[in-house]
Image (tube, rainbow, N blue to C red):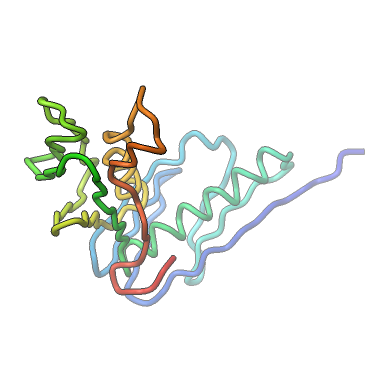
Length: 186
């Protein structure tokens, strides 16, 4: 006897936000912009919009399928939060030996004079993300959580120290705060 295991998760759609599902491609539009994501990797997972909420479901689900359903629901929640509130990461520039100079040029962040190096280190800005440098802080803002967090991680990784004692050389750029653009931690 085969037992039917159905896994369903629901994501509520707030006022002022529209969600369009075309196959496994989800487009979320809100007051701050539009975010799209393709979930074609999830075979046989149903994504539907019904009565003011998004339903993600899978029939005959195994452990991996259950995890996939909840992961897709979490991604859709983050997309809705992005188009209503937006995401902001704060990074701190820390140096004790050589003053670090940071500037934004196009889709790159240039980090100059890092531990006295002559050539600048480069971090890539992913997607439609804004990066601002304010004295010893760098602010990364956007509506797509993955683009914002990947850009912040690229900046942090660009100043990773290799071959030197971390207890002595604590220089670098570090993420110290994550929040919604309309205030409040997430």
